[in-house]
Image (cartoon, rainbow, N blue to C red; front, side):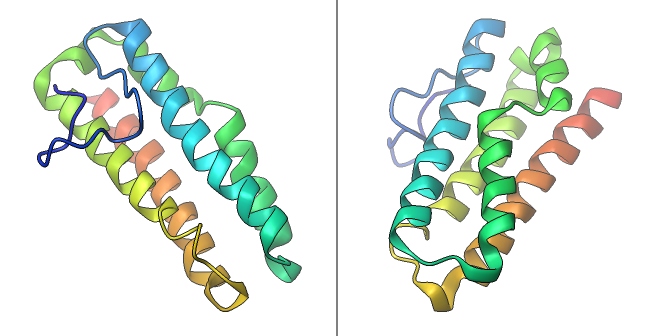
Length: 133
């Protein structure tokens, strides 16, 4: 699968793609790091109040890889176009959910936090379900 979106833009800068296991692992790290940087900037910019614990939990998800995703990355099936496309779609959704962070204020915290939680969960569950096939 390509490291670029249909419009030619990378999912995140330098996105490694899914040609082999090292590239798949790097892509996972790149996406989580991108989201983590945006969350850290939000934490410094906006008083999180009741959303503080949820943002911290999301930061932990950015810092540490989901083991279901890691097991998938180690499976050679995920180098195949169908599986790589699925991971890339989950990555796109996660990055899209994070794209609201730079402009989010206190009034948007529920939406952006819930969107990121949903995107991380959908990504992990979707990849794990494909691994079972």
